[in-house]
Figure 1 (spheres, helix red, strand yellow):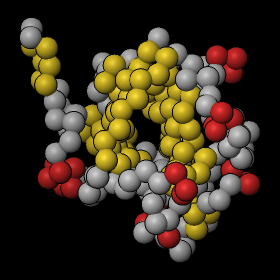
Figure 2 (cartoon, helix red, strand yellow):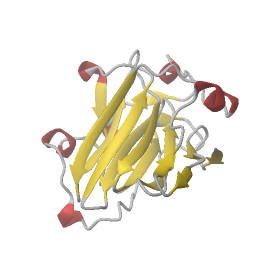
Figure 3 (cartoon, helix red, strand yellow):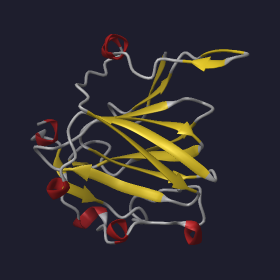
Length: 190
C-alpha cells in the first residue's frame, strides 16, 4: 500500500495495492500489521456503512471525550468528497482541512485521527460509504460543525442548492461557537 501524508499531521491517504484480473479485483482494506508499520495504530471496535444519494452531505462530525474516535473511511461504490478538519485549538493547523475524492474505482482510504471533524459529500448518483471507528458511537458526546462555515471555506464540489443535510446537521454551530479540543491538553487522545 502507498501512504500519502497530508498537510494535517496524522491525516493520511491510503492507496491499497489492488489485484485485478478478468474475474474482478481483490485488496486488503485493513491489515493491522501493515497499518501499524505505516504508523496507523488503532484498535477498531466498530464498522459502519451508509448508502446515500447525490447531494447528501454528512458532517462535519466528531465525538467528545471519553468517546473521541479515529476513523478509517472508504467508498465501496460511487464517489464522495471526504473531508477532515483540524479542530484542536492551538494546533498549528487549527481550522485547516484536507479534502480527497474517494471512490469505488480508486479504492483510496482516508485515515482521520482523533481530534479532527469528519464529513463527506456524495458526488455520484449513489455512494456506499464504509468506515471503521476505534470507539463506539455515543450520541450524548456527538458534536458537529456547520459544513458551510465561511471560516473553513470548504469547497464541497456541489452547488449549495443540491445539498441534502439531516435536520441535525442543519443546526451545527460555526467552528468559533463549537465545543472543541485543546491541542496542548491532548484530551482528544483519551
